[in-house]
Length: 300
Length: 112
Image (cartoon, rainbow over all chains, first blue to last red; front, side, top):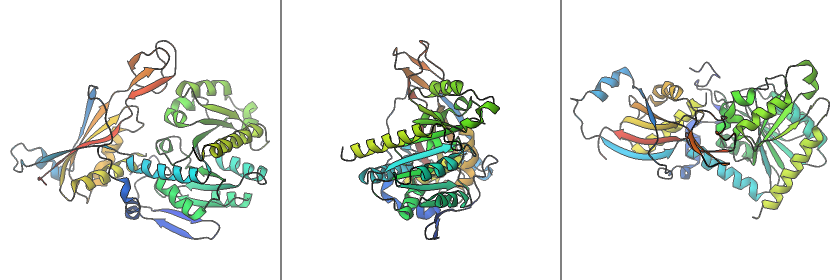
């Protein structure tokens, strides 16, 4: 039904533990049952009511339409229930549980996002190899299908779980919670959550991470921050990747940074190439600093 | 196309609140800066609602205009984008409206 990313078919999401080979399906009704206390949020939002409204009306199925809008219809006993319920409340509640779980274990959790092919997995492979004696890295790999990236991470030397979102175009907090249950990251470790390659949907879903990192490769346009503002607004760090290819493309790193700052004046940025190693020192420095802050905050 | 997942959340929230009663109308507030397209929710709604208490319900979406407050000069102004600056030139803006994603109310066929 969705020509954009294939959302809408009934393919179920799965979690594959790459250490044990165990695969678990995430069924929809199971997911709803898993967090029974995350629901009661019907009155937790307040806002003023003097705003401009525009109405978009759509009708139900034709069969129902005439009934629902026939002024002469019986059943005047209709009851209007005010909910004021935040639509993402359930995801956000699970994300907060994940965040508390990470915090209690002094785990640094980062949500890595980019368009497909920007180099998320390559950067992770290189990071795992370079920091293997220093950081305990775990990876939650999100893709619509295949365990290819999870296998690459395993081969690089880090424990990984592969979450296949099936029809879904992003990871949600519940998928990450299930992935963590299989992954069992050690206290004090770093968990990299590699989101589905997509610059739109993942921006809206809090996973419980400490920070969102957006990776923008120089083979993309330097106007991406303006084209996909939600992503760059949500991110704390923008990594410009594949800098070794800069001489061959029209990408202007200064302009890309200026565009990102326009959307998000607080965004930090780095430039690197996972292939040549250029700029990786600053990336590792940032990881160390984030991990140190997680440790400092653990009992705050 | 996160609107499918968003719509599933909407149908879940409404289904729980309706407690088995048939829902005839759902009213949402969707901010224009929320990153969610009203048309896409409307597109998904009938499909997701099928076989639930919401099947056949009409959907009303109130689109909320964006409004920002400049952290540099304090000016409040309407805005349609996430990257237009304040008149004073600053990009440090606090969004005070337009990011809503709310199930506002529902109407049911019969009283509780």
